[in-house]
Length: 262
Image 1 (cartoon, rainbow, N blue to C red):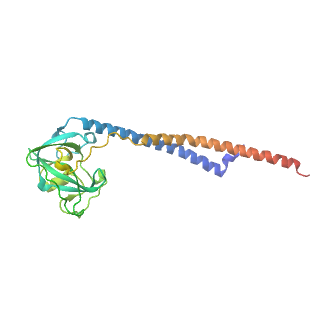
Image 2 (tube, helix red, strand yellow):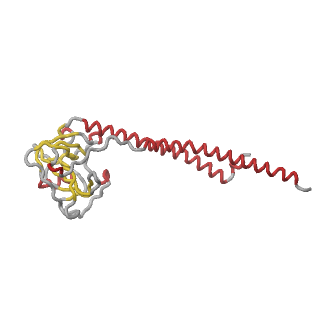
Image 3 (cartoon, helix red, strand yellow):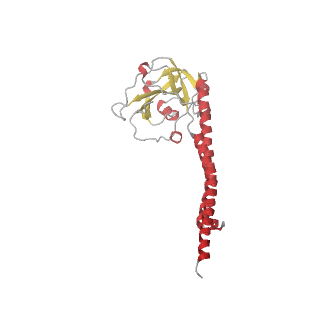
């Protein structure tokens, strides 16, 4: 009755089902891991944003790579802005997804070392290659508060370096690159400024990262596992239907043979 399972068609169908089951199980775990990563990321963001600000020199130093555990930590620094070496970072968007620049200003500490401060977003000037009009940074000594971020690289950000950039424009926020042009020691990473707020709201401060959205990864994981369970169930249903159809065909053919003329 079940010899049809050895036919080419059914062997291929069975092998396909056996391949799909582990693949869809793995896809479900992949989505589960993405969900767990997102939850852990949200927890890290929320905890670091709530933490009391600490001096930036406690978390980073020249050549230091900011670890993920310190991303978005609240830090503060006292010094003065070095607007002479201010640059803009190309192809950055604001909350409305409008493309413009981020304003990157070196901030010189009392010991002569500097830390990069991302003061926020400004729109294009006449075009993308023209240096924009940027509201001046406060003069004299000031205390800056913000979120600590790691240096950007092409590998971590996916942003490619360009060799023919206009003067005072960069693609990446990278302390080592800026140390060369500044001629002074620069702390690793940079500060995403949150205070003091710029007069008139320009540059526009960068919004804090989302720590509440978890996406649909868990739903996708459950969906893949339901698909996994459906494969063997579907296979059994198809087999039983084939058996039933073959039995019906055999029943219909039997009376015809009995009544056929001798």
